[in-house]
Amino acid sequence: MFWDESIESLERTELEQLQLHCLQETTRRVAARVPFYRDKFAELGIAPGSIRSLADVRRLPFTTTADLRATYPAGMLAVPMDEALRLHTSSGTTGKPKAIFFSREDVNNAAELCARSFVMTGVTKKDVFQNMMTYGLFTGALVTHYGAEKVGCLVIPAGPGNSERQLMLMQDFRTTFVHLTPSYALYLADFLEKRGVQPRRHLALRKAFVGAEPYTEETRVKIEEGLGVDVYNSYGLSEMNGPGVAFECERKNGMHLWEDHFLLEIINPQTGEPVPDGESGELVLTTLCREAMPLLRYRTRDITSVIPEPCECGRTHRRLNRITGRSDDMLIVRGVNIYPQQIERVLMGARGIGRNYQIRLEGLDEMTVSVELAEAGFDGQVEHLVTLQGQIAEKLRAEILVKPRVELVPPATLPVNEGKARRVIDNRKL
Ligand SMILES: [Zn+2]
Image (cartoon, rainbow, N blue to C red):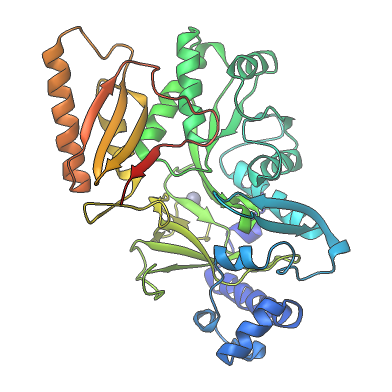
């Protein structure tokens, strides 16, 4: 099913022509209206009219998180303030957030891309959407909210947490799809199990859109089983509208990045140079249609790769593989680069253990992975536990090249995450 077939399956050559036209427009607009870019162009000797091909994007400067912080609150605005319609922020762990402005057209485009994304998975106006993302300054909930309204769905702005109420809403209004973080999806699956709810029998739930945190294929399977749904991987970031930047189609095999709105590059995060198609690197995005706050070559810090082959669904917009980590999240333990998602992949693929885990770093590079046993994971035999512990430690060593201490804990004893998960506790004294 298509929301806008003509654009979703536009011939590549035409799509690239459209991208070039929009890139040229964007470059001219930011040079004329955003002092930050005007100064950068002057510094690098770039004439705004000199972009002649898509490859010329590499001559343009990168934009980083630090640039957005330095120009906070409104230094990146490309329209007069009274043309701005909505403000979102992207949270940071310290200091000021990044402020993202939307014009009327931007708000509409963001909803349009979400509508496209939902319909691509088979959503229709008959569906009932319970949105379990956080409403507020975070883009996660509002942008999908408007997208689902555009399709004509009944939208329930539930927000995250309060699982008791979520269940009541799902039952009373026959919710068919939800949007939530992977950590809350796992928590909710546990909650339903404890309440004796069998989603496929007792609920109308059919699909879950899962995003805002990277997660693994093994986690997808756990969520699909636990909630009785098809899980579609969703990618977005506040700096690029929020959700709906890239989304999986019915094939569930990579996320179509909406290339009429975003120009994508994959670079080596250390050198800034492009990597060959299909190789892993940092995703860099340039907005092509944004009015209020166009961004050139934004360093997302997300590690992924492009799937160059066309998709069977007929869409011509290229697909991204799932995000395997953030270059910021990378841990260096005993000199080895480790992404928490690698650990998750091993844990979610192991038998006898539950859905919640935590990684602790202490002292001088001592790593402990605590993971909950599954409800039915312990038969009372201590030697079985010891064997399981050893197996998991060995699998982790094979994956991350460092052998952590593995701690198996009873079900429901690790801190519960109803919002964004805090999986890594780094107390190292380095
Ligand atoms: Zn597809």
